[in-house]
Amino acid sequence: MVGVAGFELATPCTGRKDGGQYVFEQFGRHVLPTIGEIALENLRKTELLSVLDAQVSAGKLRTANVLLADLKQMLDFALERELIVANPLATVKKGKVGGPAVERERALSEDEIKKLATQLPSAKLHLRAETAIWLILATAVRVGELMGAVWGDELPTDARKRTARLDDLSKQAEAAGVKLGVVDLGSRQWFLPQTKNQRDHTVHLSDFALGRLRTLAEMRETLPGDDDGAMSPWVFPATDARNPVCVKSFGKQLADRQRGTEQRLKNRTKATTTLALPGGKWTAHDLRRTAATIMARLGFGTDVINECLNHMQQDRRAKVYIRDRREDAQARAFDALGERLGMLLGSAEDSGSQA
Image (cartoon, rainbow, N blue to C red; front, top):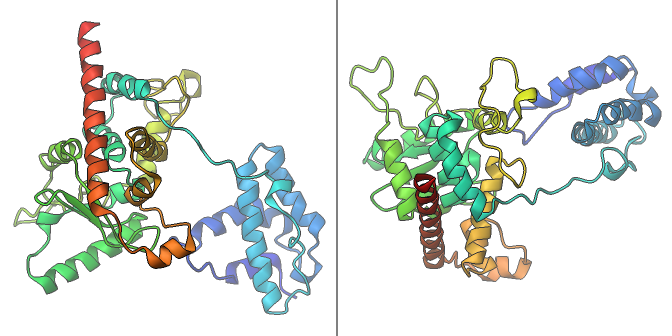
């Protein structure tokens, strides 16, 4: 007889960046204390639903849905190996557990962008974190792509050495949960060789984006203990400058400044309302949505915006037959977006000085 606890540890978690560590931790907290000693063949839907109902009762609807998906995967694995005759959760849908997933629709209005510009100085963010906000707005990259950016001029010019160096950096980026990309200020391009959509992507750097990246370039640090004075390759280096900064730390900095004083977390910033905006809480990914919204208002079509966002074609025929990535149109869209952001920030500075 195989117990749930023993089988869960043996179930492979392929395709996950962390090798399944998050799943193991979630099961250790929420699943195994309740059903870990039950033999797989004796496991019933009632017992599994009690695990999920506990999360729903605690108001953790998303956790309930995540656990449902992971439990289904584990039980399907057991079914394939004939350790059970049926998956007890096969007919259970997310809508009946934590409820349907709700897609975020938050996009900052132009007035909010101007307000954000006036509030940022009081948020006490590091200049790199401030600049990260404007770069996502100007380039529409994902936050993991932003934190995985490296400086192109730090790479060897020799082709073989360059490839080897990029391979090493890719491994570091993967370990940190970010996507490697090369920022070339000279060519005004940010090249991502591998993205979430399993294809490369090139971001044209507008004057607005270029200015922010040049600010970051002036802040570049030497690697600690390097006698040759080698510079950190990362646009957003961690404290030791040898690795990229953690994606989660950036998200926490934004969230901590939208909590309200009564919700302040221990040993975290006291500037708990400095990034709060009238439209409600916003995230780094909402900035990406905001960039797309501004492009649409500037008259660019969905096909061009999707390419700027590196979204795959949804139409199967178009995906097969249309191979043009619309690079020239993307560049025009990014330039127009940058001009609009520059105008909004200029307006914010003018209104701030008049006040």
